[in-house]
Amino acid sequence: RTHNKFSKRIFHVFYQIWYLFHLWDMVVNFFNLPELNLGFDTLTVYPDTGNPGTTTCDAEMHYNGSGTWATIHDSTGNNVSGAGTTETFCTITSTNPNWIEIRRGGFTFDTSSLGASATISTATYSIMPDVLSAANYTDSFRLCDFTPAANNQFVAGDYNNFGTTAYCDTDIANTALTAGVYSDWALNATGISNVSKTGITKLGLRNVTDITNSPPTMGAGTSYVQLVGRAADYAGTSSDPKLVVTYTIGGVVAVNPTLLTMNVG
Picture 1: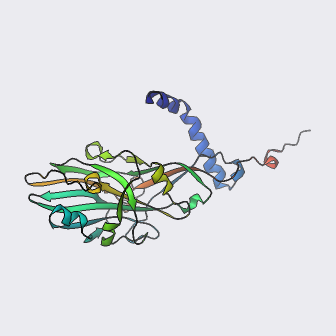
Picture 2: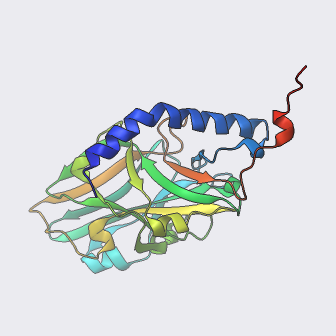
Picture 3: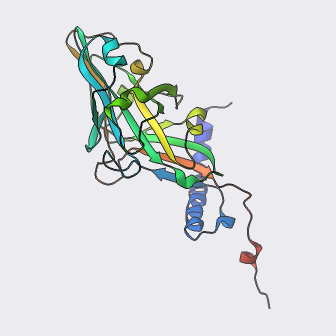
């Protein structure tokens, strides 16, 4: 019940200790010594490249046409794009007097290595915007539930498989995005409960006005607000969509006494 500045001070004071704990756990995991694990494990996962991917993927599904808001919002999707280095994961577009397009971004992550006994403390989804553009509209983007027909290949019909349940308590406005810098959505309790410990975690990203089914005020000409993000097919993984999960392993952490035995004299 104090100001955030105090938690920030504590974080900076103890950051090096926190980092060493993480480093230690990575080392003991490498040597398969769970008895020495301190419980500061972090799993970072990315979608596979391509659509289809090997196990997971990322893509945007959309309906493109011309008509009423209901026509665009409620119709079955008619296109999917998931093989580009960048994708327009979210957008709403209109050309007065018609609505033209809505796009929704889907992401799957293989989190099966957590294990059924893991306890998740935090999880953060991140995406790196590549191009920022908007005309006449402002909007925010919300992390939500998504249930694709297949985990490693999205199809146009998955446009209708996005839900409205918020997986993060804070939406990110398009004006708060920075090209080339990760934007982070910290998963809330609902989002964390939907991180699969033994399989594939599925996340969706949508414009808030799309989720709430509340069309923005149409501009005089062409209006749009969009999130063009770097996708899994972007070179390397340093700017790919990612999910970072902090967790502790199951069971009681105990030090094996035989590892600490010393012969004296």
